[in-house]
Amino acid sequence: MNRNVQLLWNGLIPENPIFRLALSMCPAVAVTTSVQNGLMLGLAVVFVQVFSSCTVAIFKSFIHPRIRIPAYVIVIALWVTVIDMILPVISPEVYKQVELFVKLIVVFAIIISRLELFASKEPLIPSFFDGLGMGIGFLFGLCLIGAIREFFGTGQLFGFDILGFNPLLIMVLPAGGFFVIGFIMAIFNWIEYKLTGKIPTSGGAH
Amino acid sequence: MKEYKLSHLAIITVMSCVFLSVMALGVADAGTGSGSFKKDNEIVISFGMPVDEAWAKNAANFMVSEKTDPDIQLPVDSVTLDAKRISALIRFREPLNLSSEYEVTAKDVTFEGKVMGNVVFMVKKSQGQILFTIFLGAMLINNFVFTKYLGLCIFFGVSQKKETSIGMGITFTIVMVLSAIMCWALLTFVLQPLHLGFLKIIVFIGTVAIFVQAVDTILRKVNPYLFKKLGVFLVLIVTNCIILAVPLINADSGNGPMESLILGLGAGLGFALALFLMACVREKLELCKVPAVFRGLPIAFVVAGLFALSFLGFSGLSIF
Image 1: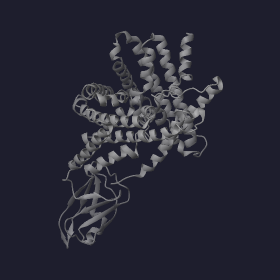
Image 2: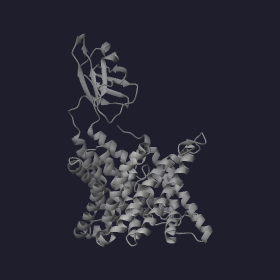
Image 3: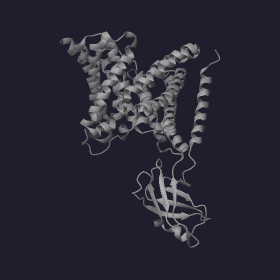
Image 4: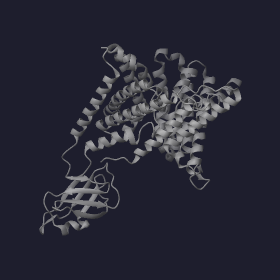
């Protein structure tokens, strides 16, 4: 049980998919103009990650190693098709804004890399917690960026007006997303530098 | 076949682009009407003979509607004739949607007091203009990297050196164009007749993966030199969001074969442009004193943000 908690924590901060592993950056910039969008896509990623991790963990003995990558892609595409049908029922307005990226979860590097690195070697239970941890880490990243951009860009949070004016309009423009991620990554690096005394080499960028 | 170099491939790509755009202009249908858009709220129609000025000045004589919903009449602001009284400029209060087709009906055209009956004009952008707009939109105005944030993983991964960025850009453009047209064919001839539209995600990603694998295998046998140069990028392309996004956008907006192809071409060239620009800056960044915590990816993101800001300048660009 202890190891499962460890796996959950691992995905949230030490190996956060967005800020530490630098995987699947596209949605992190694209849909995070508000917290709601980030939350929606984050939930979709959690769903796809958990279910495809479990599927691969169960069926790994049937998947021939040489065709494993196409097999993983098909598994992911299956679960993405499922969530793509569920989300519009839950919230049609928000879904409209993140529609393209929900479909693009198929090519998110984070999911296939967890299948390859973890779920294809470990049994069902740890795979489930690893998938959940990574998914929640991704959700956390999206919500953090979304909150910063929405607050500074429009003075709102979750659609509620807080400041009443737009402090920094650039934050909701395309450029703002890049700046926010760059600075959050630098802050993560700085925290790690203060804690361990050495600067980590930043992620693989794949 | 040692003479094969990247520059040769670049020339071939550019030539094929020119060829395709010439083809695209050739497809432009000549049959539809003698009207054209001037500004986004002006239509010019030509009667082919001089008409009475008093008749033409009356805006109520012109009925304009979109072809898709003929019941909704658009309010005409004013009509002006040119000096020869042959063509008329119809001005509207609200801007028109330039990508759709309009029907202009001139009621009881009057020529020196004689009523000649109604004349209907079809006003539409020519196919070539539409395609060029799509191309420009995908490449600059809505650049897939800087304003739609697609393909960032590859964008940050491969943009460290100019040479690799050029190789990646060319390979990507070729694969993009071919897979866009293949996905269009699959959607139109297989998925839609069988009512399997909901399977398009699975089918598209499978198509792209199989296609890339096939190119990889063929290139390895046919041209080992080129394979050595481009083989690494081929594998990476499958994980690029743009390669899946373009067929999905094509499917959602119901694009035809030429439109799909041009969107793929624009997306590919736009990605290549972004990659090359970024590589130029990052080569220079290597020599700079960047704060330690910003080294590597964080500073690359800030640079990309600056590029995105400058690409905002393209947002008002329109040629037709």
